[in-house]
Image (cartoon, rainbow, N blue to C red; front, side, top):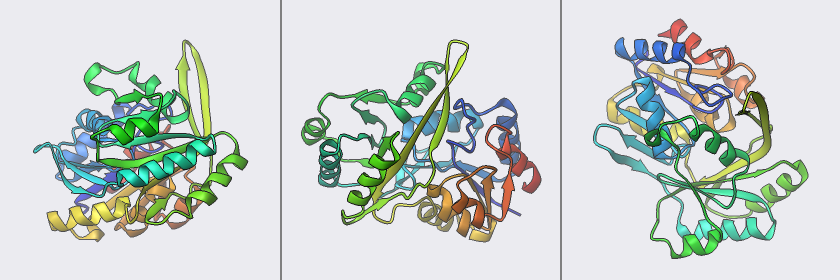
Length: 289
């Protein structure tokens, strides 16, 4: 009997339009009613995840920032945190600015960006379809370095870096890996998302990586949570599609990858379900829960 299911959002629970289908919501709620805890494990900040947790009826915990935080939904506070230092964030911003590459800084509840491009454009388009209290908080700032330097904000989840040129992207990755005490996500494939422009589907494609504090990982956060809940790892299901899901898929009692996931995840998964556009999460829950 599985007691906890940890599910990634982008590319997994959410379809290419950033939506949890009604059928997937129904299956998740049925799974919770059977006594299985279903939690979100995402790279997004708190407010963005919380809105989706409410939609699917998950009301205990969620993991954000790729494992940087665990949020207690009922008590409305963090029970686990591993933030990046402000100085480390400023160092990475300096490197990005020198190399003219797009980046976003994720705080506890907000995405800071200098323009609406790549992943931030996708979140912005998502917001246009959402009620005010369900939107991802995006703050566009002119001078990121000065903004963060002068800000009282100290809780930085991660930095995402995006570019549509593989050459430029690979160059910045090499430089980032020389910085100590950070984790650089080794993403090997291009991200593909779809936004609606009137009646037209517009693809957004870009290479990206995510930088967090050293030892930040979704599985480390899950381990902390299952120890707190007195659950064995054999009683955990983890579902995901990308490199930031690798450790949780590898270590959970049942690791499930979405069809079309990055190869490094597909290789170590115990089961492959349908794609995020085929309600693969719902199919996996129906089969195993």
